[in-house]
Picture 1 (tube, rainbow, N blue to C red):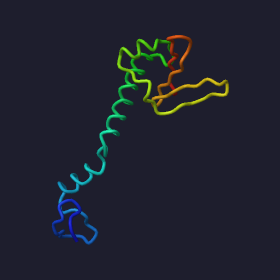
Picture 2: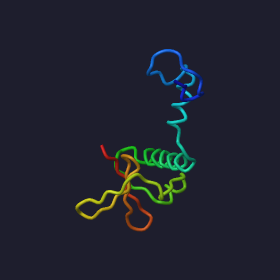
Picture 3: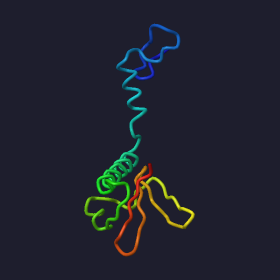
Picture 4: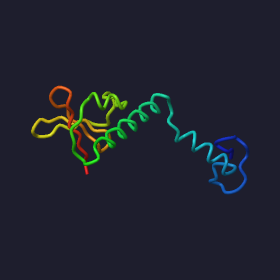
Length: 113
């Protein structure tokens, strides 16, 4: 049997996959890393959007403006889900932080508990 990381011969148990902890860690780090720059960039933008919403919406429900959000670096193209409620209101969420567009420049921020 050969090590999945370095291809050296493995000594020990029959079901052993790696020759040592360093190879096991290296292999798993490669497997679990963001596989492309696109994924890494999207995840970074989602994290940034979440932090911005969290910093503005400290009370769980508040109004702000698109201008204020954009000035902090918020990117309206990146969110995790859209929820449409029975009354027709459409909210975009970044994880548990959501927003709904109101009239003109205003945005309603909410937090799912």
